[in-house]
Length: 588
Image (cartoon, rainbow, N blue to C red; front, side, top):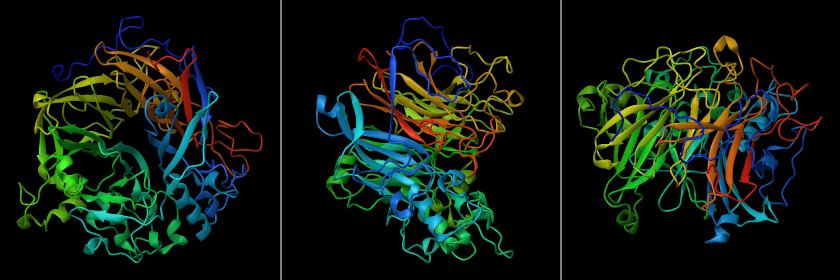
């Protein structure tokens, strides 16, 4: 059962017997990708790589057109999965990499930067978003892209369908254009039937307007909609993103989107029963024959959710129904005594009634955040990735950082370093409505916070990516903001560049496994089935940094020049292949 609430698990000491068999990597401020002795790396599919070897080649000055970007790997790699093609040895050396592209850096995407916004620039940015499906194969010791009938892009303009309680015909989804696109694809999930779930996170930032008479409705404001957005300024060139002229378009985003990687002709489907919010990911497990999908809403003061499918998922599929369209969405409440409850977000239940202004279940799902507010869920310090321990079914969630919210589940006020919370569902049944919880680890630097029980081999901050391998190692990836990375004034100088660590939940031991280049986030991790090849994503190397400066059209290499180190090139997000030189299991 879970450790009593509020008692952190000890990080352990290097050398103790457990799952971790590598030497910890030191922190680093270098513009390099560093792994332990006995490991080797290979850069694979950086931004701009053609999906097909015969496709349009990358241009290092950023001058690829929107049409060419449609046929190339997108920008800012994030969540990722490896789908083996073949069984046994074949499945460990050939498969589909399916990966998200969260957003774009317009200073690097265009040769002349974003000062002038045009229709072509919006089209290229949309083409660099979404999901890439690419076939990769190991040949003569090197992984490479191969010609594939499965290769494709799902972008900001790909036709999509809506399924579940919220139909595309719903009045709140009626727009000036056909339903299309997925944006700000952060983490992901994988279903038991072999499909990929991509999750729309900070979609609100793409919308804006120049209309001085416009102001957000309370529903729009709850999702962070404002006239300026995140500064993309797409609304200047494409009315689709003008919130004053096409306000319902934004209601088509904030969903979990199902993609069949082996059927390029199948439309992506937005599964509305899973709720509308800033989905960081969607971790799917099976319990008592039913599907359960966990998801964090990545915003300071928002919530942790789970969806519990209705009935046996195999039966549902045999009847031609999606297991993700039928079930109940819950939101978590963490009590200070180490117990917790899943609160149903079901129309007609509790405060979610017509008398309180709720119209139906579709309304509850479109306004998921306000529904969670109404039922009294626990506000959290930016809930991000969720992972389930395959050995004992414990559930872990990264809380990246936050202002600090009332309750023991958020143990610091403010919380600049974040923490990882863990819970055990009652009876080890993921469909249960009660659980017990504890803090697995409090992140940070003991030089600045004496409550942190970490050392030079494992200090880290702002945990984000989270994944369990089949042996029970917990892989922890960090996303220190570039407003804090490497800065003593923010307490992040000793932690330095973003990193990935491995933890042994049985012993509490944590070790730093790799460190990324300057300005990047480490995100997305998966291995081949034999656990002897690992794929990890390096996102936004060279992004504007308070410590290192900012890229510009005149000097795109101001912060980083990884991975090409081309004097006339620019930094590129990429997947890194990691293997042991002796061919052993990664991390062991």
